[in-house]
Image 1 (cartoon, rainbow, N blue to C red):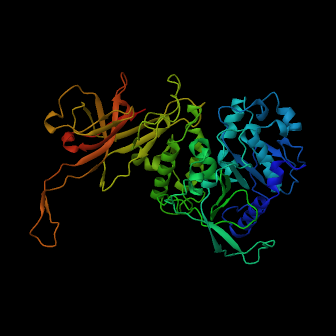
Image 2: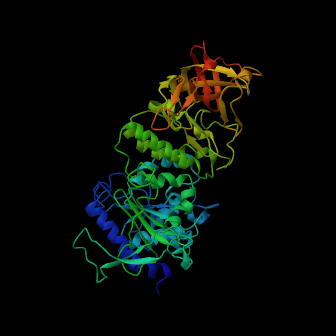
Image 3: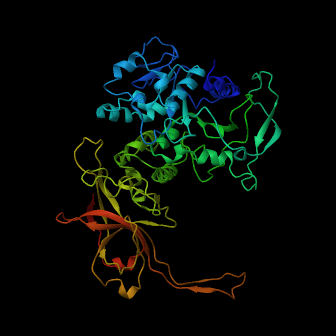
Length: 536
């Protein structure tokens, strides 16, 4: 008797998914340039499915194997992964002989069934393909995440559950979560693809988000899925060339050139339109908001893209705070070849002045405090934080006031030393009665005070100016078509942007970042010359 999963896999779902893969293989050369046999890169270990349902962990594959394609699973562990679902030093040899599918968490088991049903011979799952109690193996394999997901033939995103035993093949949802359908003529740009007797019509989803009887839509189901709240899964999506997302209500296909969705389970293979292309119109990747197609625009646009990725990443939850840099390192590594700049703890040397201008956004906490006795990242990097951040996108800034002299961060957790930057900039000690707005990383905010009180009080902060706007002269602003009505706009001093710092006791000219400074009155710096300082 067929299991539920086997029955589901023999339905129209599989035919639709196979068609998507064939269509992408045939018509999207940018999605998989390595060809149908897969890329030259191989993960250290893969789950071998060629003798399914007998499967095992393969570490050294026969070089004579013709089909070396593999799928990669993107999912969440939840609170923990059972011992039966992990490879450890104790069971490594056992897993190399055989893996008992029936003892695996349901999501992993579903991934094995699904991958086999699509005739993909290998599967990568982190819990099984990385030795979980071997720190050196974990760090070595984590450093290859950019290749594991970018070179996978397909990424399977188990987006319908927030734990490893939730599965993704079986569906359960209320009928009101499904949008209204309308019958439309389906176009076939491939021309001669077999329909297997399917009707040449399709039921497209009504995307009227305001419909009174439509409390949820496929877009909501997609964007609200548990994977989008976890830190590690961001790079798994950004790096993958093509993904099948299994949400509670739909299967969503993404690749570098197209996207579509259909209601699950599917009785016929005909796909549903329209696509997801306009979900995030402010994002600059080819598909929004994912970055499988890096922008071909000038480098400044790529830096802006990185800022948006980091802002998204900073809102996600992280189980192990020390993974903050590591969990996005794959995206940084992939982007580095396009940017051509040194990567410094989440910032880019070629854009360092702009990258330093981040600040806390709201009171949310995304993970626990990092161990104060351990070092994770310099104070000027967003990577030490446990709260959402945003980057400033300066408008009408005409002058860069600081010059980066040197920058260093350890390249790994085992490399000695701490990160720092040396720069030449104007710095000034101020009190809370100052001529600037300070947004401290602690969440405390201090706002601009009256000019006559700016230099009063105990000097609590140091402001470092990174860029500024020039002063503006007095002028008339005429807002009618004639010259008889207008407003006199008074002259304004130059305004600066920069960092709020705190001096490190006992180390000359050395500071810690404690926040962000904006709307700084530049007349405070009259007669001040740039100093060389170090921020650690």
